[in-house]
Length: 273
Image (cartoon, rainbow, N blue to C red; front, side, top):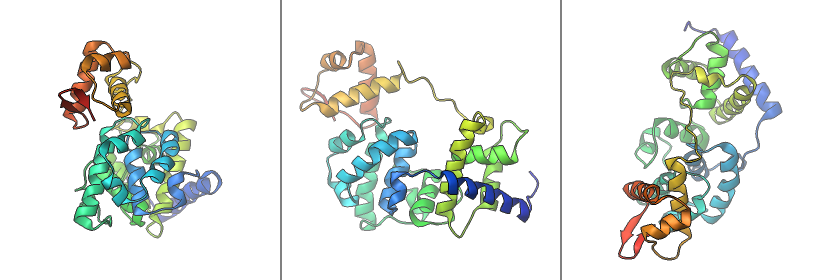
């Protein structure tokens, strides 16, 4: 799209910040910002809705207050605290990342997105987001709420908008003096727009509709993981199927998938975390 004027950028920022001043969300990870709390919240927010993260994040942080406590905890304990979040491999990535931060970086998270990307489960967008929120660095990234804002304001009559075009505008309009506040404002405004305008992000080239959860393989894996986290002993496949209420083949498929992700191990007595 054509270059936007300084006046239009100023008006756009005024709109975004104006909404934030009146309707900014009070979220637990915004109350006391540290690189560690930011890292944990960003990993949680990768594939889980904000209300669920807001519920679980404070409990998780109370149990694992710093990198060292998280790194030293057994994986099963971390997975137990993660229950309700879904996509359990993120908990394993988070546990692995904590160990790497302690071992490689002396317990101090690096601010450089290039180094952040070397940690388990951290891609370019998450690395940039951690740098922005955790260190107030003026990185450039896009996620679903940011897409909604820019598509609504700058691509009103366009379909299949690629992220490359959105990112140019994200960089052009970025408040480099306070990127943490700016991105918070953008995301809160995007959440509002998605409710008020039937989600403008649907017109993104990268928009994906999440599949139904009920009856899905994801639901089956979650049930299996929850039972094994609760269990004090390994469980045989038959017992896993019985406890979860899954058909034997669905239980077997879920166990196989979780084992492939490194979340379960097979023992002489059955399967365990």
